[in-house]
Structures are given as C-alpha cells and as structure tokens.
Image: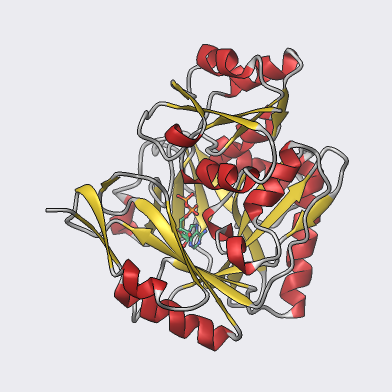
Length: 371
Ligand code: ADP
C-alpha cells in the first residue's frame, strides 16, 4: 500500500521504523531535504502548506496522513473529494489548527476546557479576570504563542492578534491520553501519561506512564475521551492534553490530531507503541493491545542552550550501560537550543525506581555541538 505522510520529522521516522515490520511504501512530503525521514522513505521535497503541492503529492496514494497539523487543509479536502483516504479528516485538522475553532468545538460538545473569551484584536473589551492565558489562534507551537497575563502590567504586552484568552488553571498535574480509532470503528486508548515537573531539578521535559491518578480522575478522562471521539467523528490517532487542577477536576488543554511526544515511552513501555497503533489505523487493521509493561518514562534529548551546529551527544555510552534503557535519535544533523534531537526511554518495576533512573540519566547526557 502507498502511504503518504505530510511532514518528515521524528514522528514520521518512528512510524516508518515500526511499519517496516510490514510491507508498505512510505512517501514523505517535507520542505527540508535533511529531515528525519528523508533517507528512509520515498521522499518529496516540497511545501505541505501549499494546496497544489499537497494535491500533487497525495493524488496517487492509498491513504494520506499527517505528522504535523500545520498543513494545507484545502489540499486535503480536494484529495478527499477525489476519493483519496485522508486520516484524520481534513475537517478535524482544520478545527484543531485554529485555537479559536478548537475551543468552540469543546464548548459545543460539552467537553470541559477552561472558560475563555475570544478576541480578534487587543482593542476589544477584555472581560477575563487576572490571571489569564493568551493563546494565539494560529502559529503557536511547543509553548510559543502562549503567554500568561497576570496583572495590569502584563496587560500592556497583550498580543494584538486573534487569540483565545483562557482562565489560568491551578495545575496539579499535566496529563495526556492517546487514543486511536480505525475505519471499522474500533477505539482504543493508551494508559494515561503524566508530565513530571520538578521545579528543583527543572525536569520539565519528561513524562511517565501510567500516571498516578485516582479512579475519579480516570472516570473524568474516560468521559472526555468518549465525547471527543464522538464529536471528532474521524479515524486517526489523537493526543488529548489535559490539566488536572488542584480541586481534582480534569480540563482539556488542547488536542493533537497525530502521533505525540507524550506517547514516546510506549515504544518499550507498552505491549505496542503509538506508532504501531497509528500504522494499524492507517491500514484499518485490528487495533493493538496498549497495556503497560511496568512503569515507563521518557526523557527528551533537547539541544543545550548556547550550542548550535553539528550535533554531538555526550554521555550516551554511559546511558547504554544501564539496563532497560533505550536510546532513540531522530537523524537530525544540526542541533540548536531547545531543538528536540532524540529521547531516552526507561522501563522500571516501580514509579520510584523509574524517577530515580530518569533523574540520573538526565544528569548524564547533554546535546551539544561538535567544536
Ligand atoms: P503548545 O501548543 O505550544 O504546547 P499549550 O497550549 O499546550 O501550548 O501551552 C503550553 C503550556 O502552558 C502548557 O503545557 C501549560 O503548562 C501552560 N498552560 C497553557 N494553558 C494553560 C492554562 N489555561 N492554565 C495554566 N497553564 C496553562
């Protein structure tokens, strides 16, 4: 089968890695000839934000999907009209692309997400109480395009662009649910993942699975997942990012209509990974068992501050001496501050053991540039 993917980053790369267990042809469209998938796929260099490029790329494929949501939706709509299978639907991608439409979607379908106001410019009357969060309608990614407005002083910095203004949630935990649906209508989710934030160690960049949550919280999450999947009415794999607040209530932060960083530990931490699951969605195969194999966690390998250039990984040999530790690099040759270059997964017998190992690995590795 000819599978076409818009985007050739690490998500596509790890999808192809798992899908190599089967017999398919992967076609990738990405503007960057040096992207993570370029050397492991039938690669087309091109702009996935251009309608005609998307149509030309997709028209002879059996299925077209995405590994980034910022793609040209009109191109995908045209492909759907031509009878090409597009997963997820262009409609749900369009809604998720724009924070304003996304928030309205949650409201319309009674999916709990923090109370909000929509503004098109900063001249509008702001009815939100301090503190609140401003999120740009488009162009936000990895925390960019999001700012907290705490008081009158911050108010002067309000961006003058179409935005969602949203209540600042008093966050106890940030959680993520990865859920998949195939054409036959089968739906399966992974155990909930938890982002661990330790301000002392500044460990903002690892997540662990399964999350430590109460039955009541799990019930709220299950209800959200059911409502979301009904409302989205689309095949695909989705990552629903959630806030658990200090009163025990769960809110939807946002959803990604694709593979997600919060599911990487599933590669070794679950019976099957998010990548295997997504592959099965693309082919309408029976969905895979998602059970956890003990406690698993993931540490992002991110380019250190002050280093740009040809990447060099320090400490990986030490990490490889540890058991139940798995290194995944994304095939990116150039590092820069904050760039996601790879990750390390760890599987352990207890949550305490897992956290201890992640903390020690974090101190061992560094992503720098070769001199
Ligand atoms: P991105 O899509 O760029 O990742 P998010 O909308 O997820 O942006 O916001 C980034 C981070 O900002 C979140 O992970 C969370 O820590 C914080 N944040 C976002 N919205 C809120 C909110 N309403 N209340 C509290 N913190 C928030």
